[in-house]
Length: 270
Image 1 (cartoon, one colour):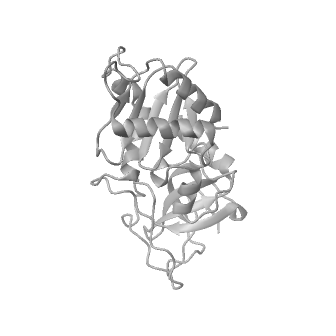
Image 2 (cartoon, one colour):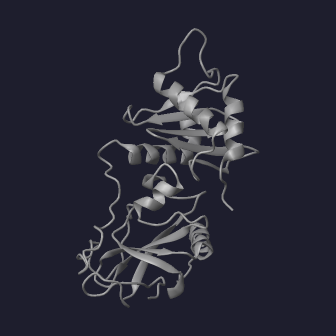
Image 3 (cartoon, helix red, strand yellow):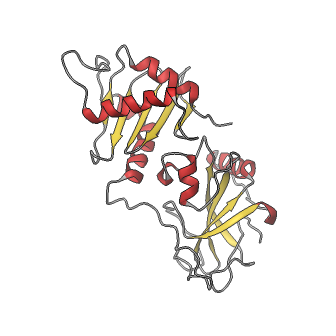
């Protein structure tokens, strides 16, 4: 099986074969960088795809076969996929070519929404089931309902659009405003986040990424919650129990120490 821009895998009955895969996009699945819609941490994200959580991670290549069917090809060649993504992000072309030996699995469907399609072939659709009763096709999270996947996607969006969210919050907000008790859900999140500093959580549960200046962008997730923060600024909390609500946590006297401790244990992109 080969995979290039395109190419990789399916036979006439939805089985892996020699038909080209026309690549549309690719993402990384590593402890420091994975589609958070798949899980609160790296092992959960791997489990959602039926993969073992190897420390080196994987690359996920999403495309269509010649009949238009959606496929997700999993490769162990993380560096190659990272190079392709970086090149595409710069607006340049890159022909992503996978070696058969690096391909770990070919999964029907896409775990993420893809807004483009290959011209000249049938519209994207799920492949027919395999003769061996293979797993059902992967599908993106339902954007019309609120749950863990949508909560994590919301946290992703805040991290990407930090400036627009931050300008809505006063610099005078504190960790716990004087004379007030914190939101019960936020209080639980902060306590669980502090717990991570005492007992490190699974890989990817806390991640640290580049931010302007000397700051870092922190992402932390847990059962029913997500936290997004800048190490030199405030935090935002999203909860499964509060659909669509974004709860700010002002900086105050306590938050800086918590964010610093989380950043020390967070995984970072290599």
